Amino acid sequence: MMHVFTEATLPRMYTQVATRNPVLQHILEHHGQPPLWVRPNSFATLVLTILEQQVSLASAYAAFQRLKNKLPQIEPELFLQLTDDELRACSFTRQKITYTHGLATAMVSGEINLHTFEQMDDDAVRRQLKTLKGIGDWTVDIYLLHALQRTDVFPLGDLALIKAMQALLPPDASGSKEAMLHTAEAWRPYRSLATMLLWHWYIKTKNIKLLH
Image (cartoon, rainbow, N blue to C red):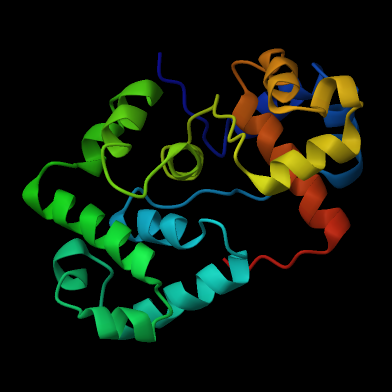
């Protein structure tokens, strides 16, 4: 089943998930509600998410800004007109050129239609996106959470989420991926909200500056 959050429903959902765990309650009480972390359901959003794979947010956003300066709009048809050298000048690696080219080609051909994803359940979206080279579970998770605003995403491959859980929860609740998954079961159907609360704590306490 497909469930989404909106700016209007977020406060209620944060309150509900915080009652499931004292750590989440503490974050909400001491740091407040996280910012509205949403992105458009667009090719540009998926390109940015691919750029964010395994690098710092600052590095990814710098590359994305260079791409924005290169194109009037970050659309798949325009993107495919850029040469590999032009993309390398935007700090795209060879792998990420391959991944983003594959995504753009799939969208131009109609193989991937982001608007149809809005009516599909999370598992169906995941299966379709993961047919593309370079798009794995973490990328799909971030897209589902930020662009489709799904309520029950738990991006276990996310380093900030892992570090927050390990810092705040006892080892039996966070000492392994299996333990984290088990802990997060209690947060259904609002695992996305729990994730954003944990991100919020991590960003606040580590003084991380978000650039977008």
